[in-house]
Image (cartoon, rainbow, N blue to C red; front, top):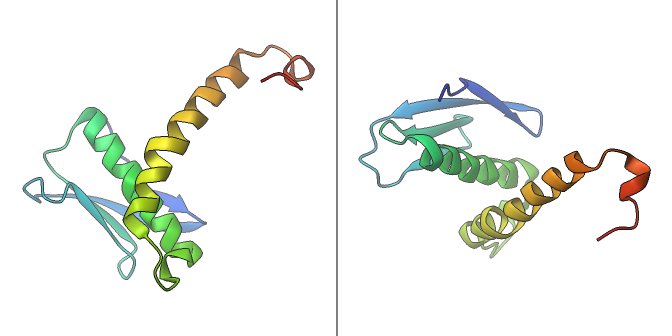
Length: 108
């Protein structure tokens, strides 16, 4: 997999860096450095999922929501990645399979 050097979240450029982390954690997001650091030893699905996880952390921080008093940051990230994203990926496939936009309206 070719990992991009940067990604934009909320219009903010964020560096993506591979670094030896010994697998604990798999990665982390630094708001101050505007950087996502991923374990150098991650590959394939684990690398993609960790990047996604850290991008969600970045989005929550950049939106300001994660700074609300008592905000459950990690549970929120896990809910988004395990509940919402799979549903959205399935929906995207359904939308692509629809040949005509008007054929899709009103169907569940």
